[in-house]
Length: 305
Image (cartoon, rainbow, N blue to C red):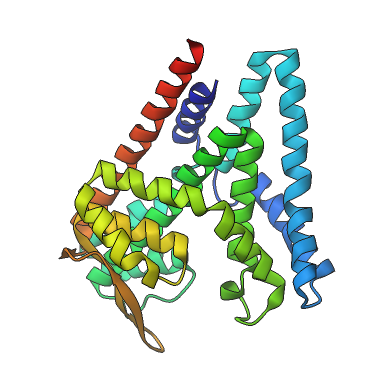
C-alpha cells in the first residue's frame, strides 16, 4: 500500500502538477495568516498555541479518516494516501524555477537567470555571477527536494498520511514563523523552528545518506562530518554538505548582494558550481528517489511474507 501510494502520487504529480498558487495551499496559507494575526502577542506560548492549531486539526482529521476508510475498504485508504501525498509531495511544485534558471544559463541569458532565481529565492540576485546563480539554484533545488519529497516520504512511511501532513505543515510554519524569517528576536516563531528541527532530524540524515549512496559516498560522508555543522540551519547543512560531497562541487561561499557581500560557510571541496552541475544535481536527486522507492518496495514485499 505504501509503495503503490508513493508511486501513484509521483506519477500524478508528473502528469498534472499542483501549482504553488493552488486552492489548497492558498486556503491553508490564509488559515496560517489568520492564526498569526489572532494569537501573536509576541510571546513564546502564543507560537506554541498557533503551531498546535495549525497542525493538530489536519493531522488528526486525516488520521481518523484514514482509519475509517481502511476498515471500510483498503482501496479507499489507498486513494486517501494518494490524495494527501499529491498535495504534500511535489518535484514539480518547484522544478520549473530550477529548469528555467538552467535553460537561461545555457543560453547565456544572465539577466533572465537572475530574474527567475530572484523570484524563486524571494531576494534580489541582481549582482550574482553565473557561478553564484548556479550555486544558489542547486542549493535551493536540493533543499526543496528534501522538504517536498524525501522528508514527506520519510514521515509517510513512519505514520502514514498523517505523518506526511505533519511534516509538510511543520516545514511551512518554519519558513513562515521561525525567527530567521522575520524579526530575529521574535519569540513567537521560536517553537515552529524548534519543532521543525526535531521533526526533520531523521529525514535530513536519511536524505544525506541517500545522496551519499547515489553519488560519491566517501566525499559526501567527509563533507557531512567536517562542514555541515558550520551552516546556519542544521538540517540544511547536513543535506547540502552531503550533496556537495556526493557531486564533487563547492556550495555556499560568497554571494554578491545588492547591499554588500554575504559570506557563507563553504560546503564541499570540489569544482565550482556551474550549469553542468545543475543537471548533475537533478540526476542525484532522482537516483536518491529511486533508492528510497527500492527500499520501500523491499520492505513492502517482506511484509507480505
